Image 1 (spheres, rainbow, N blue to C red):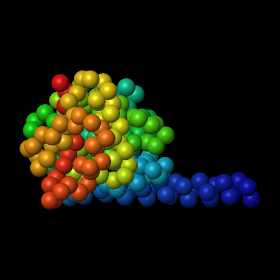
Image 2 (cartoon, helix red, strand yellow):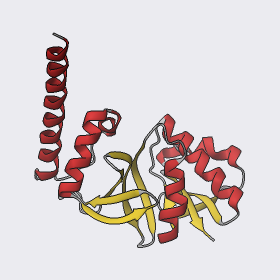
Image 3 (cartoon, rainbow, N blue to C red):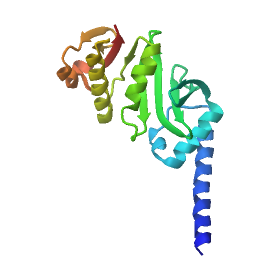
Image 4 (cartoon, helix red, strand yellow):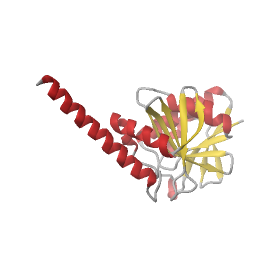
Length: 203
């Protein structure tokens, strides 16, 4: 009875993994190939594993950072979007959806990192992307976790002394961010519907 129960549980888990693989393969192979997904998929162990298998099959291995293999794909319905998947073994540790702005800046759109690996994506930003690009720019709308993330990387950038930090308003006006206590007033809704983005730029 015990062995039969274990076998049934194994078969149920295997069925779940296979269904996830098929679902994610369909996502990559569909006309909307690789469109940014709900990042909650990475929080589910089986779906995370399935995503790794799908990414290794359909995306391109473009680089390596520390122990992470970086797989990249561009959706057919969003040619300007770049999606980098940081894989350690059989686990997605970080996911980054972004585009390139003015040829030398990264414009962030969607980020996910393994919740156990605190500070992982900040490390990736400063020691991988900012080694390749002049700066990184935030999205316009931020979730509560997104606000915390940007407060941390703005502080890290300011403390290092190697970066200029400022607010980019309506894609053109630079507002120096000399006091980090002013950060909150630039989040989400700006006055008169103006769009604010945070920028970290190498000096």
